[in-house]
Image (cartoon, rainbow, N blue to C red; front, side):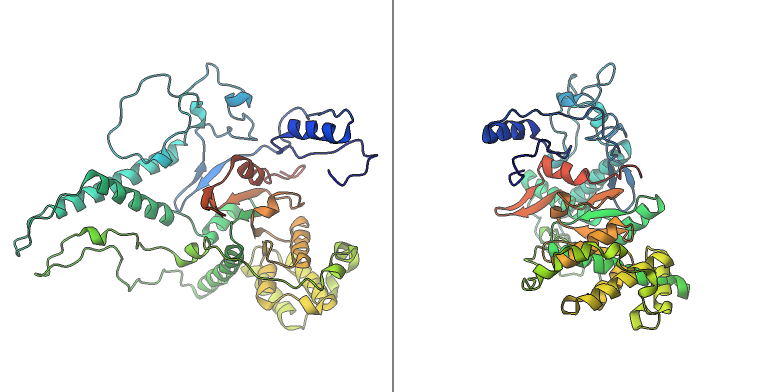
Amino acid sequence: VIFNPPHCQIVGLSATLPNARRLCAWMESVTGRKSVLIEAGGKRPVPTFYLFATKRHMAPLFRDESAGPGSPRGLLGLRGDGEAANPPLLKGNKKKKKKKGFVPSQLQGIGQNVMPSGLDLHPTLQTAQERQMASIERRVQRIVERESYDDYDGYKKGSAISPREQRRMRESMLKAELRKSVPSIHSLVSRLESKNLLPAIFFIFSRAGCDSAAEMMCESLKTKAEELASGSSRRPVRSSKRKGKMLKGKGGRGRGRRQSNNNAWDLNEDELSMIQDDEGRNFRSDLLDKLLSDELDSLDEAYSVEDADEGDGMFSDAQLQYYSEVGLLSYGETKEVASRVKHFNTMNPDIAFEDGVIERLLCGLGSHHAGILPAHKAFVETLFRLELMRAVFATETLAAGINMPARTTVICSMAKRSDVGMELLETSNMLQMAGRAGRRGMD
């Protein structure tokens, strides 16, 4: 907007812009010309539907499955968004008895006195949450009972656990259970593929996490294919002992102690690695000028599929057939990707794709973040735009100003690292990423 020449009369803005009126007033004050804000009527061309995924479920997020920002029914009249229910169903109008049991603050409703009931948690997720909290409560009570048990081996009667310590135990157990309930990338992609919800953009707030997720997904696809080929799909037997077991007393009798109730639960190292922050990789800047030209954008028509040499290692016909069976693309699409990758490496030998990256591209996977060369990012954007990529793992910088139409967006975390530590996502950032879902004229 700032660098537009003075003769520009129309500026097109995204519908996800939250402060369009302020921007219009600012443009009028800066240019001294009358500025008129014209908002397109109606709803989104492609309405959004919100789902929540766990290891067991992928259920609608809201009780009213057509509710939510950008959905057909909007926020059900909340803040003037969408149509209110008739009669309007609002929470908090009646006094309710206080339920027994532990309900953590992060799971309680926000603004319950005005929140439409259609924006409540979906019954499937609500039931799963209640079962989880009941299980945690039973575990805490067992620990409390063991702590106050007078052992016959000479142990003194344990000191009672205070309500404050019990609350901390519940919070710790809840965090561990929530982490363990996160589905793996492979299972989530498989669910989306079965429901015809690909291509998808996975937002991960870590550069290293994006690369790790793409690599992990590629290895999972190959491992799954090998298991199916060998006819062995059984899970390996766990030989290590489960963490969090009771400590042993003098007489060999199991006696639970508070020290055993720590945060060292069985977590998937691959999932943990996805949230570890990293400064990312540095890239060379002396080759960017020639790569940011129109030559890269003209690759769409610069060559054909026949340009790929069928007898050249990773690009051989046998290898392409293998990747088409293992990955998310068809054989024709895999061959198209191979020809484009080979052409790029031939034209740019100094920044050619590594074999590991090529393998992911042939499987229909990619990563997109600020630690990647701009030429590589543009290549990923081209593949995704041409529907030659099924899943891309990206940071939030992809959410603005890049033409990568996706059917589904997956927000892998509701918090990200900032200058002052971990902070929850702002509403505008959340809606900006969610708004990337839906392809006009296709979905």
